[in-house]
Image (cartoon, rainbow, N blue to C red; front, side):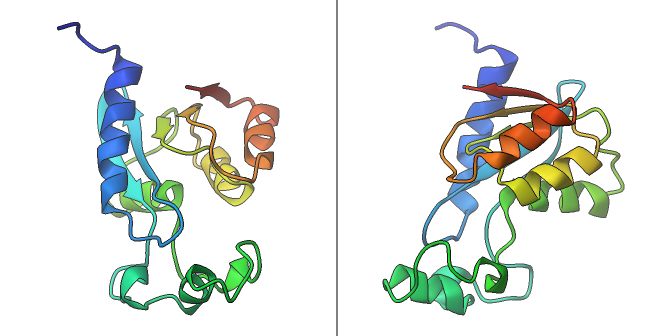
Length: 150
């Protein structure tokens, strides 16, 4: 049995984290790492205290899941928080500085998450390409964030 590289190790952990996601459309998991230490994890779903999407917590997700709404319509009305956002929020909640950290994500960040990652001081993003919003990757690169698609 061969020992996984650090990138493989953290990406495998992000895959486990995504199992906590409660989105009806896509499960995403991520891990914020600094100095080879896990700082925070994140997955997509409803905020604390809000009913999970699978139980009707987000009307938009319910409509989209039933085919009553195009997948890209009314995105701003969704109550769900993206995995990347949750990892930054968790780090802040714990009082951890994200400057210089690396994000490992099962999906490439959307443009909104990319802006947050840039301003949170994330220096590197390792992800898989799945999200329809490819503009996030370009934003990250323009800001000098190293992006690796694996």
